[in-house]
Length: 137
Figure 1 (tube, rainbow, N blue to C red):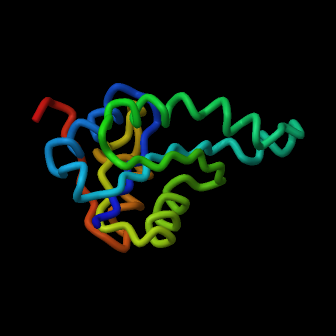
Figure 2 (cartoon, rainbow, N blue to C red):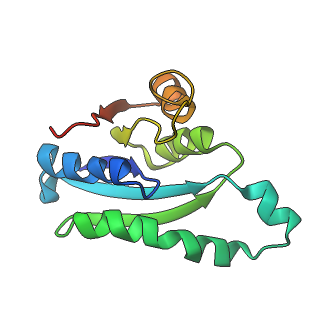
């Protein structure tokens, strides 16, 4: 069974990753790990913010992608980290991911074409990384 990591940020662009998973994989052939990474760890600590509450606040992002994958074995998780790109790579290693399917940065005027998070994941991932195009496929 293939393990597919699907990092999403809630943007319409990132949700295209879920659509691509459905195109590439049959439900019986894979487990999908849908994650979102909150990168405001330091701010949360400074505000003495409840980590569980921060995770609950971000869960709708993960749920939205999971709903698009009805019929698939989906595991959902919210991660909180100082460096999202490193956390995505770490998580992929931890679960033994066969592939990461993600989009490029959703931020404008961001580093180069891919975005710093995607660029780091592509360079450091322990598995195949598929970058979903902005235009429909």
